[in-house]
Amino acid sequence: MFHPKGPSFVELVRQGLSSVERGYDLLAPKFEYTPFRTPNGLLKASLELAGPPGSVGSALDVCCGTGAAMRYLRPLCRERVVGLDLSQGMLDEARRLLADAPGEAALEFVRGDALEMPWREEFDLVTSFGAFGHIPEEDEPRLVQGIHRALRPGGRFVFVTGDTPSPLRPGYWVARAFNAAMRVRNAFWQPPFVMYYLTFLLPRARALLEAHDFTVQARHDALPEPYGRYGYRVVIATRR
Image (tube, rainbow, N blue to C red; front, side, top):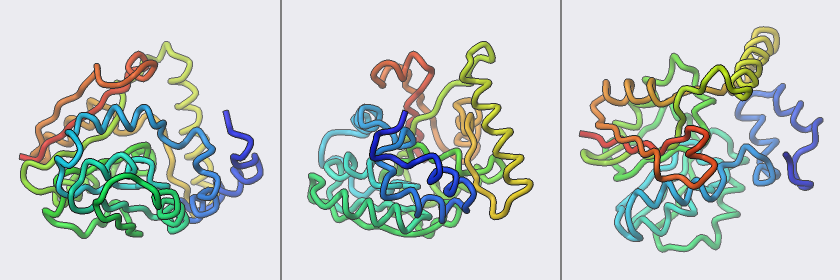
């Protein structure tokens, strides 16, 4: 599951007993060697739907981590690519790893909260990959509102989510068990570490986006296997 250069069990425990910000600061130097990092194949296939190189003005990657998606966004953009993350450690790694990223767009790294984004109609494209589990369900409307504000009219929000999994699949119960353990951890240990699975799934994501003035297209045929078979979808939500 983990690369030999990845974090040890003890390091993961330390991360899990920290806040989200501190936990990812600790994990940042080894994050690229964990299964938590979104695979390149999924990123590449998703962002190919955003258009050919140079077709986007400016893009924002929300919860950018170590910048994996920004590497694919930069050739798409003519002006700038902004990465937003709560963890300064992850941003420092992103800056280092993207030093040789192809493309001419300016790269910006902003430390901040995804629920408190300051931008207003500045981006043609917003993306987010692998981060929805860090957003409590009750805060998802605020996330969608912030993305809507950040986009120009006609701008797109591109992300990957899944269909609601069948309870007959073992993975469904593994995710539920993890979520239960995380709720117990957060009930007895402070600060909380917000990380849950089965969040912002397609039915709820579509309803939230449409309620906030987006049109929504979910592509079931855009991802390489096994992602499509496992129910993953690329969602393209366009601000009206």
